[in-house]
Length: 132
Image (cartoon, rainbow, N blue to C red; front, side, top):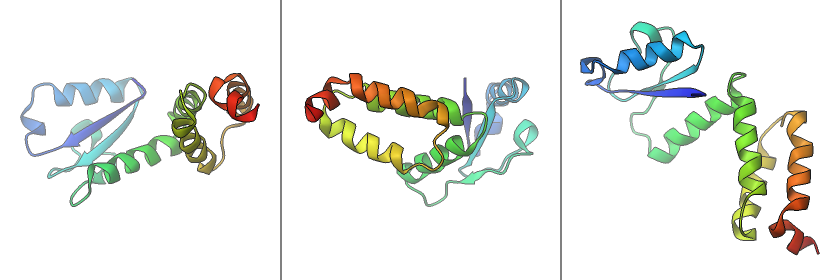
């Protein structure tokens, strides 16, 4: 696992498994993202600041998680690798174009992903058709 999102609801503490799963993530040094949905971080994740989900849409919560993942040194490279793949493996211009624009809008792409992105786009049948 690259990260763990723990949705902290009032029933979270009642489960025999949730604290064990969070503890396993913490023990492995995995990024833990507590999402407060009626409960606050405690125990193993008490040291983390939770993201307040109250009044937010699923899309807003997903965007918040994405921003945390792209900012964290422990997950940043993995997220960029996945984003490069979503662009270079897209099956149509309608899908690839917005993905490329979204990727290009992110600040400070690690240098190691620029060449694979460029080469993937050049090999892509989607972009190859539009360029040729």
